[in-house]
Image 1 (spheres, rainbow, N blue to C red):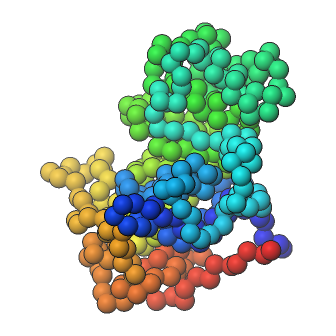
Image 2: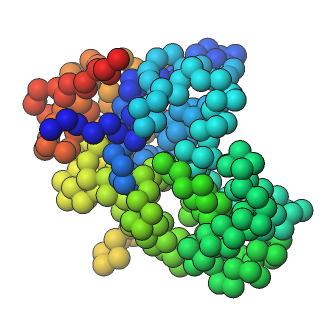
Length: 336
């Protein structure tokens, strides 16, 4: 059988920022593929490059100072790197939608919710949808995201709604055009724990019901476990482990992933102090040639100074770590 073309196919993607202090190597040779209907969590500590990766892939990082130095980004087989701003605007919103972490920042406080929703829907359609039809679509989406009394919220201003309600509106706005890919960038960070759980349950439900393909960005493995089936762990601009979410919790392979899991609070274990990963991130103005986690790794050895390739520890589990002596994984080249 022929392998299906992934919805999103990022290959050898590298990005730098040109600064007054030198070249900052933010993303280095990242590979990430998503199949149709798959929900993948992109996890790592603040500053590791999660948001920069997804935004730069779709032309949302200003250039300069950003500069893509290598790689390919294909959405449903179409190469995106090299497209003009106008062409990318036709992709964003329609084929790719994003949900951000602070809904108040992305909703205009001087316009009613209904106006913003209908304007977004009409813009996504290129003006082909009439305002009355856009209103019907908006109200239907507000029902899909379980917003109470959609007609009333449709007429409200953002400040009249709670944080959880505003986040549901952003989800409705993102999904109204039925995109091929949804990127949720820390969608629950600004919410309290109870509302956070409700939003995660909602997103998992929508992924299943609408057949969405989704990337959920988070610093918390516990959060992505509620909405994703697979996780890619990122550190200092590199993906270091990629596996099903259940396997990451049962048998984490990379020392960084293990450190993240050890830092999670356990509901049935009382400890005086949570575990932490010692040390600091490497200087990405002068990144190490080998493993970027080596300076903080308790298992580091001489081989970590050399470039590290991905290795299989299971058929669907890869890790970039010299502690595993299997043959390096070969990333197939694009077929042109």
